[in-house]
Amino acid sequence: LGLIEENPQNYYDFAYKDLSTITDTLALIEAYVLNFKNGTVTGNTVTARGGGLFGHEGGTTLNISGGKIDANTAGTYGGGVYVSGVGDPDVESGIAYVNMTGGTISNNTANSGGGGIYGTDTSKVTVSSGTISGNAATNNGGGIHVNGGTLTVTGGTFSANTAIAAFPLWDHW
Image (tube, rainbow, N blue to C red; front, side):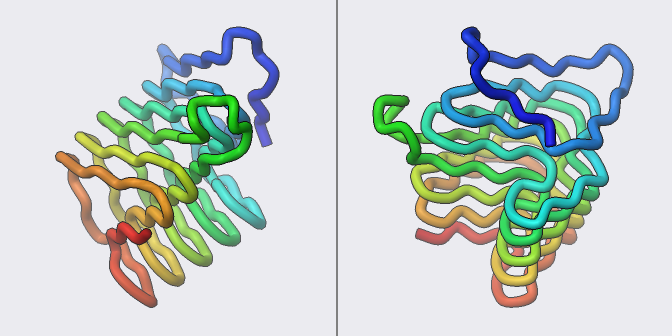
């Protein structure tokens, strides 16, 4: 697990010149910004949440504009990406964000919900471009599952996402 915490700048910019591979889950806790522009997060397995990227607590922002989050597995929610708001009430009203403007989230698995992306509590998930494909969830949201947050989709490509219990793309309050 790669843990990003207690950085006074609260800002991380992953822009690899060469296609680099990250084989540990990247975790952001409390008011951090991750700009994921290139590279690959792949092959991770976690027993709980967030196989590829894990963002937790208000003010956390995951900006995905390129790269690939592929073939990760979560024991519960968010095979590719997991984000949850709440946490510190002094930080950005407890809202956590995923903003996808490019890149690929593919072939991830969650043993409950959100094979590709899972957002909960006061999260805001926005997809305007990119590809979400081949993800699977045992319950809801093979591609995306937002439970208690807000989902906005204005673009992107969604294909071959599966969910056994319900919809491949599911927004649930």
